[in-house]
Length: 194
View (cartoon, rainbow, N blue to C red):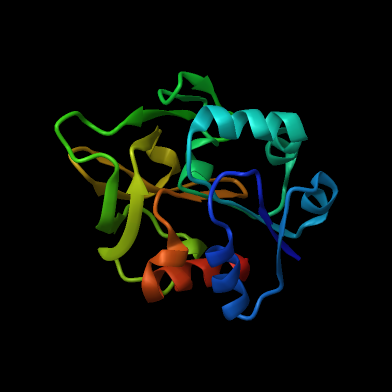
């Protein structure tokens, strides 16, 4: 079973509908027991890092995330919370993928809401069948700056930053695949098929 973590940070319904539409069983849950038993975990999110981090700690889901060995996909804030530290609220994150989260540069319209081209840096099963320089939908004010060895794809909005990151069983994307048309659905399908 694929489990989408519900930690009171964003609309998870559209993500669940996208995955169900691809033909996969999927459940939204905040139950640590169900999350532990999942064969794949998706960690979406919108909102603020501090309140999301507090919810994860209160529920014990933070420990499950750090110890899981199943395929894991972080989306938007879910990606950023995998970092070591976030400049948003100066909060310590989960330290799953080394790196820090920074605010988009001053002088830009923030949050960035819209479509960006994503340039592949390395091949990955997550990106199979997706064209390089494909457009994906972004809605964010912060970005995760990780070491190049973890970066699968980049984009730019005033600064170049990772759009897709991977380490071991952890994958993460800054964009919203469920809102990114056919390319986003292909990425979700690739993840679900891992």
